[in-house]
Length: 158
Picture (tube, helix red, strand yellow):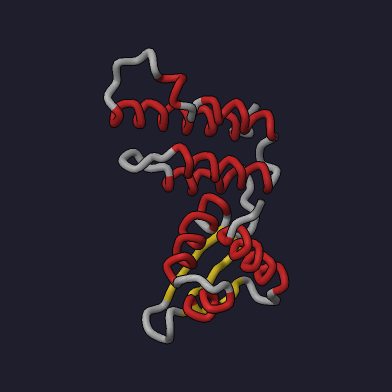
């Protein structure tokens, strides 16, 4: 059963699909009023459902009632995915963000569902239980394995 977050996400995606420009511009307060929620709920949706890994760029302007622009980043091809690897930086590597990147790559037909499932295995915590690494070391190992496997998969020189 869809929740409020799903409804807000769907609404914004429909606005983007209907937009003649490359972006939509919304006011946080007006959108919150439309869905009878607090503006922080809108922030939550934007942070969780519209990150770069899923192909969106969100920019907000101070003043003007909390005006926000949401851009849909066009499909990337194999060569330009390396730019997104920077978002998987060492200190803040997060398996959930990496999974969102995999979903985007499936949507853009850069990788298959099977390839994504294999890469997703590297993001599972239980895979690393036998190691005696502390959480920080574990994240670094997980990131290195994931990024290297993904880079190898995206090579075009085979």
